[in-house]
Length: 390
Image (cartoon, rainbow, N blue to C red; front, side, top):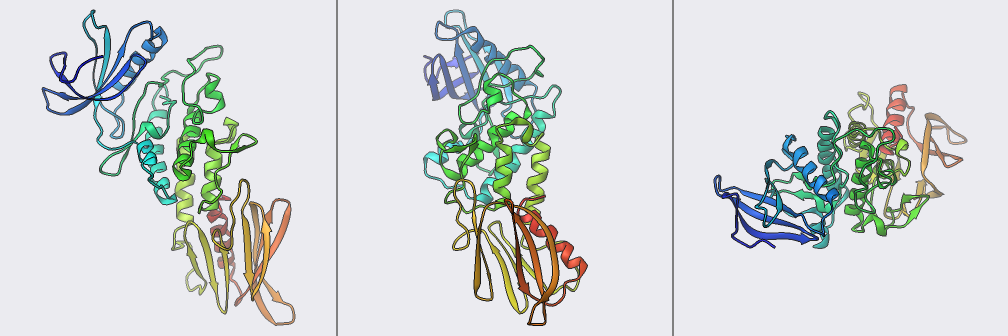
């Protein structure tokens, strides 16, 4: 073990031991030339360290040396200490702030809005990494490898499992990653960009639930995480697509995942940008509820509290109209009609929304003046997008 205040390469002075295990040490140090704080990762070559671990350590240094992104640690140096000690050292920039894992352990609660913001930042990092030639796969995205800096930006650290070569038929790669966050294909040695997306999804679910993904229940290989959470159904669908067991069913790229997330955020915004001019329909949206105010009656779709109960695979909707209620269970899989009609015996027009839930169809109505074609198109699109159906 190295000692506090020890000077490496006549430049890096060790200050605080940040971590230690199995022939590895991580130190906070000071660069005596610049007076900047740096992180020194050390690996000793001994009977506790295999050649493969040394190869991965060298690869981490080589990959980090060529990365330039404000939310990835900056490479400073890589060197071997004297032969007596035989330590290999990687020096990189220090990012002040706790890891997301530390925040979880301190009892910090991440709500949907915070997790969405973190997701967008991490996807931007993956856009950069996966867009390199060849793509760089991190292969170990998890809360402990994400640092929340003091300015609110999240930084992806620890590239010890990085893969910087495209998998070739017949080639083998070291199996790396963390159980619960790494998808099946990665544990089989065949990581792809979609593998990082799975790890991202598992990480976001951990933040939302406070439970490590390895400890969550599963159904058909899918993580079950919605119980007791106040989440928008479209966001749940997005997370489920990130964590599909079958890699071909996930988003193909970080760009595709980011585009869907951004589109959905527009769909759940309070103001509907596509609302037709002069329409008197009021549409209020939050991530957890969508409400249409249609004079003289109110038609609302709620997704939590008294109207919705999340469990492992479905949520319960309660539709109310004129003091009556109808309960249906299951994920809404389609909305194929929004149209006006005539309410029998009352000589009033009504708004009809035709929903498909599982294999059943439901017609929900509310009294209002006649709808224009533009209003029908607007409502159909907004409701579908809010539910994450398109």
